[in-house]
Image (cartoon, rainbow, N blue to C red; front, top):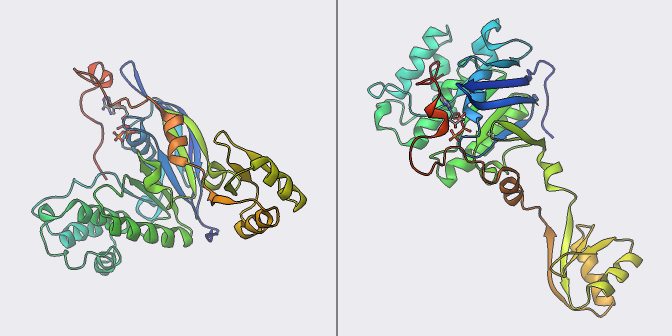
Length: 325
Ligand SMILES: Nc1ncnc2c1ncn2[C@@H]1O[C@H](COP(=O)(O)OP(=O)(O)OP(=O)(O)O)[C@@H](O)[C@H]1O
């Protein structure tokens, strides 16, 4: 369990709505993001994740509803840099400026000691790239630089838009460990992704949206359901009876496999052996979260258009409001 510090900051989103013309990009969205937890903000392309994050960060005005960080709207935060850091896109660095200079400019503007720049280059694993021009960075290096920039003010809250985009498997593993470490310090972390599988091992909580609306929120553990075991045998009914005697309840699924409410695979094996039943397969039950995610969001990719312009672009304001953080 992650530690939660008493001075952690929450994000509270209430009835958040954004219309672009007649198109509703974000529709009456409400959720909380808690300190000491990593929350995945999930939805297919075009679901409204970036627009929501931009509203939370005061870069886009909400049509209605509110989003607060540590009890304040972003614009009213007494100490924005020390409260929230964000990495929304990994492509907005001045291409001719080195990674270190980029961070120095930001640190200078935020009255942050310059020593923090090298500390963060080290922490995010790009010290060697610090002198290289950002224009020569790989996508993964840009992601790390964005993360370093977000952390400059040692904020209580971190908001990251698709941070694993462009990272190789090693980079994704590194990011996972890094975010875990930050959350164990009590930081509040909101990470968006269009793939649950990508963040499944990283996040504690999920907020899933589709078509701008909330479709599910809760802990990964709740989503995964009760742990158990799946057994393939020649006579599932008879094994169920034998397991009942050992105080284990079970049901037979559509494939004829027995789903037992225990994770003690050895116990199941022993019971089957005593009952003289063969075991053809025995494995812990794992909820297929990716399948659940697709089921919840099926057919809602609003960026997929067959010919022509996406509906949102047809009647909406041209150009996104605000600047990238
Ligand atoms: N300034 C804008 N004007 C018009 N439509 C917009 C604007 N910004 C976003 N949209 C539309 O709002 C919808 C939600 O976009 P958003 O970028 O928030 O989704 P997303 O979930 O972040 O998707 P992705 O994973 O593709 O970035 C999309 O259909 C998009 O085309």
